[in-house]
Length: 344
Image 1 (cartoon, rainbow, N blue to C red):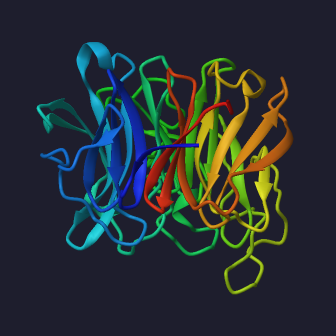
Image 2 (spheres, one colour):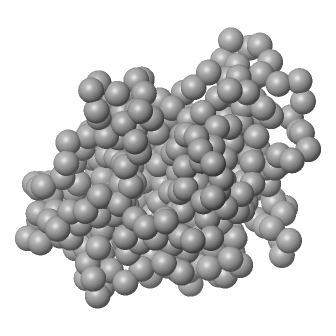
């Protein structure tokens, strides 16, 4: 385990720009540059103000699939309007440590904004076909069937799908449904914290926080309902039940779940060359349980085994793997980034 950068304040998302440069978001609202293994003291300027309260702030960062040609960098953050907040996505370019050419890619209608600091999501992921998937949590809505996550009229508690410029794909599942938000790809997701597309299998994987128990790993598919809060393997924080049954016809079951909750966070699918025995494995971080979970899956995308790594090493926010084949682990606390490489 090699330290890439430390002294960070609640880092959230990480990308590799190439040429020895990496960008990492800090939840309070700063974007930091790592150059040739050194964290630069001054942050990137031009980043918009964020709603840095509770779980909100500057969240995920993602690169356009043709970043080396067009330079587009995508940022997801908690955006404030009149004391209320919701997830917003912008894109821009980096020029001399300043974020320029900014464009709004997704912004919800003002009447969707709500108070509180819980369950913003937000992870972003391109599918290699010009589509950007992203998650928005249910914003801590009450655990009743009327929860935002079950309402197609709300962007909250959903996985969304848009074009790289913010346009709406013509084959989105609820595009012509009266009253539905056209960006919705699936519904019934409580607080999605990990989202990765496996280009080897074509599967979109997602991790999301349950309540007290019931953290989930899901295979995300078009138009499906993942059940929250109608079905769940978790219970209320008070100890009372949420649902009578963890299953219901027409609602999807998770690929696996964790009870008690591990506070599952970022997700990665490993296809690098440094760890050939781990190719095709999923890696999920855990905040509260402070560990990295390695998941083995078979050809039918069934979870066949789990291994707990880096236990009690700190709150893990995200996991990434880049062209060098190493596994990068982003620690929320203590604020640092480490690089896993084979033992010599």
